[in-house]
Length: 246
Image 1: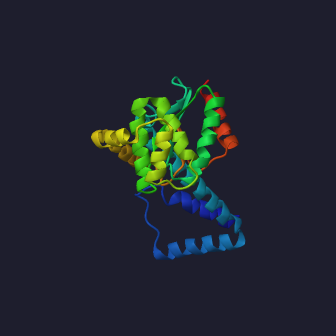
Image 2: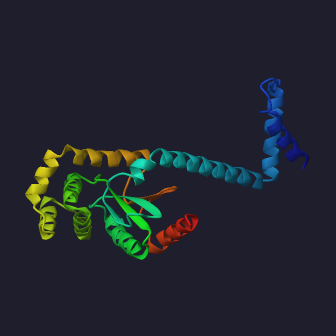
Image 3: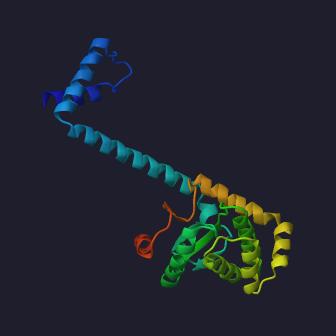
């Protein structure tokens, strides 16, 4: 017990003031020996220290994430992006996805169910084409289709995500035509409207600022959720936040 008290006293004394005289070499060695003996006799102290460090690290990460979310709130939740669900929501989630992402193809139907079950929920689509040229091609055509209306975007997005294999230009064009859209007209729109590719670039840069390096990713106003999540997990997250928003 005396050793533990000595360690605690040393920990308290050292940072008290810059005016305090520094320990000389002999005193430093005594403290080291004291700490070593205490750890050998009471190894649980080390586990307590490790756990405390983990807690502090998680707190620091949480604070940093909250800061990033706050500074990007407008671009995440108040921009003119395609969306599903309520136009006057109580909760909004930004969804970063790629049409060539296998886990996104699984996440999309889950989000569709949630939107149908929660009338106060809004899902904003942030197309994030990072899995090759066909991802970029499909994402650009999706944003071009948005000019036909939000529903045209949603229908094409669902069809592209329903394609199980990796996309190429032929599969993209076939799906676009099946949606009753003019492929060549959309391609021309992508070339003529430089804002489409700029928007995709902004989505990728926004994801990078949020620490998102892959898809899918869901961004709540207070948390970034990476990777695929089952319906029950997301339902719990949504219920919690809707209760808080009452």
